[in-house]
Image 1 (tube, rainbow, N blue to C red):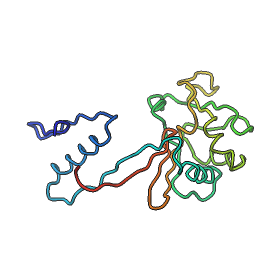
Image 2: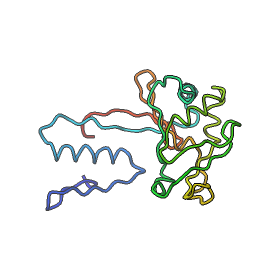
Image 3: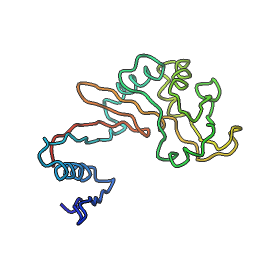
Length: 188
């Protein structure tokens, strides 16, 4: 196995290429087998990104729209720093948004409270929520006046994480993309 090996000092060296998730999964399983050889096989996660024409997208987006409006979500809904902004999290004092839902900017603090988002989206008709989520932009700022922008505008759906289950399959919205999360057993 060329992507995972033990060194002389018993530490691990792993070479993972993000474009090859099966190799990454094999590396995680190999580490588990080396570190705990008598433990039962580890359950690892494989992730498949759904395509824009996937027939499940309408059902997933309906569930997301309900959760955005504050309905009891059929899964966890939260805000998280996307890759495009995470390096600026410590410098962020405030956020600038565009006019979300026709009700003006969203008063979001660096705490990233999902309740602020659901309060705004509850005012938007459910059928329009996911489109509005994709159109809305969030920009971290280094000042309270929201003049010193730390990143380019980032679509709000890149800041939202949401998980739901349909027919015993787990799906997640992360960084604006829907993914199917599959639990796999043992090494590959």
